[in-house]
Figure 1 (tube, rainbow, N blue to C red):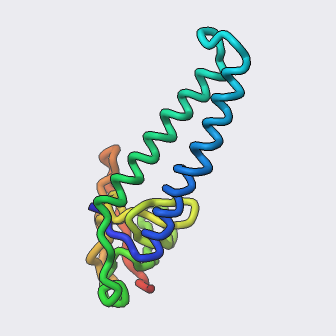
Figure 2: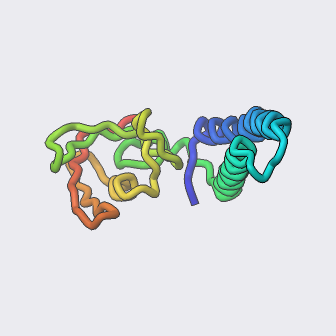
Length: 154
């Protein structure tokens, strides 16, 4: 069960709505155009559009399930920066890479924006750690890495 801030839930709902509307409309149009090419048994455009439709519907179902299981973070808890919690930003020293990393811990990852999930190996290991404490992370490949918490902020 993923925990979300109000902002995180809003973004998730917006993403779902976009897929339900614009995403479905776009796929429907692609299918319509592909059908106009004739014989569907040898129509690569049609097959691709149908595959994309299946992927879109799977993404919609996944987001719907995430929203059903989502829990809202207590904002008073999110304001407490004494330990790493969902909704907070943590600066940590990655011992293996010998560099500082900054992550916002939320219910869903977006590495490009520096957001990691509280259920990811790194996110789960950092939860509950205070400044100065070290988190041991066992990666999916079995490798163990260590992060030392430097700063926790809202």
